[in-house]
Length: 79
Figure 1 (cartoon, one colour):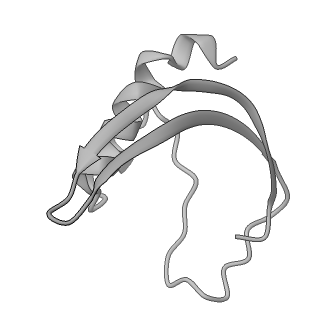
Figure 2: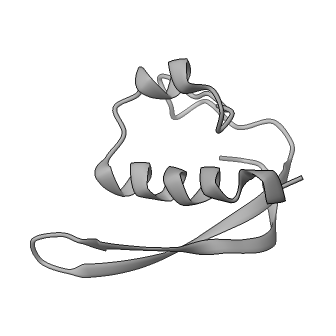
C-alpha cells in the first residue's frame, strides 16, 4: 500500500477453515504512517472500526468479519 506500518500489539487470533486448508490468523493493532499508493486500486478507503455504515457497504469475507469482531472486542484497548 505504500505506507510504513509497525505492530503495536497482539489483539487475538481467529481460526477459519476453507475447503482446502485451515487458517489461524493473528490479529494485531498497527500504527501506519504515510499516504497509500492508490495507482493499482480502483477504490481504497481507511475505515474506522466503529463505522458500521461504511463497513456494511463493503463486500467483506467471513474471515474479514471474524478479524473485525476480534478487533472491535478489543477496541477499547487500542488507544
